[in-house]
Structure formats: structure tokens, C-alpha cells
Image 1: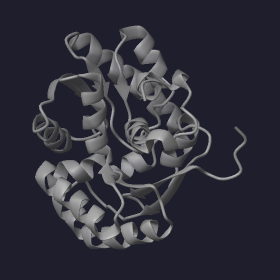
Image 2: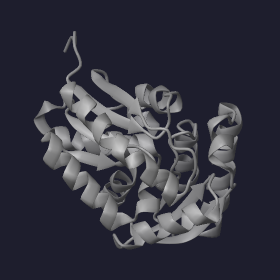
Image 3: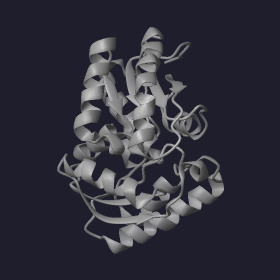
Image 4: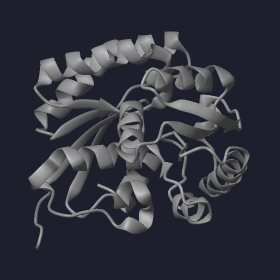
Length: 248
């Protein structure tokens, strides 16, 4: 089918004032005709205080994207949801849907939905975050019945992650992914969260080596959005980007 206009618009609130890896990776993994509309917050740290400072701005961003008639709204930033906790995060999403009339999601809830789609209850975790963030993330997914059985992290500050090298981060994804999956053969999936993490090319490599789904923010959020599209979905993503995109 020839496309002259997007058939699906995903509204994405990014925790930062600029967009780079989110859009770069989205347009490699999403199917033709799916468009990403982004706006941003100005998160300065991986702390609850920093997250709460940005919450009033979130409603303005949701209203902005709703005015663009997006099909779905999503708040990027696993550390954001982790800091707030699952109860508060889900309350915010429910309020966003009530305000806009549009389904609202966040990367971490999309990860949970994707893991449930695969029936995965035990996962390995690889991150570039300090313990306080990964501990909060572990507690968040535990509330959904998902256990982190192993974790490998190369801890960095938010500012360090903003200015990291894409090539170096690809190698880091391979190194951490291999290490944690070898340490936890019982893991049913690997979660590598982080919108700033350039890891899409590591996904098919790790899946070929270990045979388990590897989840990234952009793939989980895009996959959940596509499943929600139902009959409106005109194209499917290329399965070369991994099991998440191949199992819509």
C-alpha cells in the first residue's frame, strides 16, 4: 500500500530538552507510516525530587501532544517511573487519559506489558544507572509479579549518559547483556532500559546468542502502541530488530 501520510502518531514526552537517540532508534525499528511526535521535560537528576519538579510541566506536554491528535501518549524515562513508584505512576497515567481522552503509557509499563506478552516472570537487567535507580526499578516490576534474578550495571550520572558515545554504548550493551545472561540462565528475558542508550544493534546479536527476548524502551513502547492500534495497523515492523518487534 502506498502511503502519503502517517497512519499512526505516537506522542512521546522525553525527560530531556532535546531528542536524539529516541527518534534515531524509533525510525529504524518502527514500521513505515508510524510517526513519533516528541516534546520534552528538563530532568536534571535520577532523584524523586528532580522528577517531582517536572511533573507540573508534564500536563502541559500531554495537552500539547493531545492537540496534535496523537493516537497514544507515552512518558519516556524508566528512572522517572521508578522514582515515583508504580501506584503513583499509574495514577498519573489514569489522570492523563482522563484529561486528554487518549490512552497514556510510560516506558516501564510498556516493558511490563511486553514481558507479560512473552510470559516472562524472571528477567535479567542491564543498565547504565546507579544502584538507587536499579533498586527502585526492581521494586516497581516486582509489584507486577516480575522478578529481577540478576543485574549488571555500569553506573553513570544522567549527564554522563547524555554525552556518551553511541559506539561505546553499543559495545557496553553487548558486554553487560552477555555478562548478566551468562550469570542468570534462568532469566526468561533481558531488560536493557534507557532512552539515551544506543543499543538497537545489540538486540539481534544477544538474541541470536542466548535465544531470549531483549527489551529496549523504544521497542517495548512501540510494540505496545502497535498492538493497541488493532486493525488500524497498516504495516508491521521488520522482525530483524528482535523478538519484541517480531511478536506484535
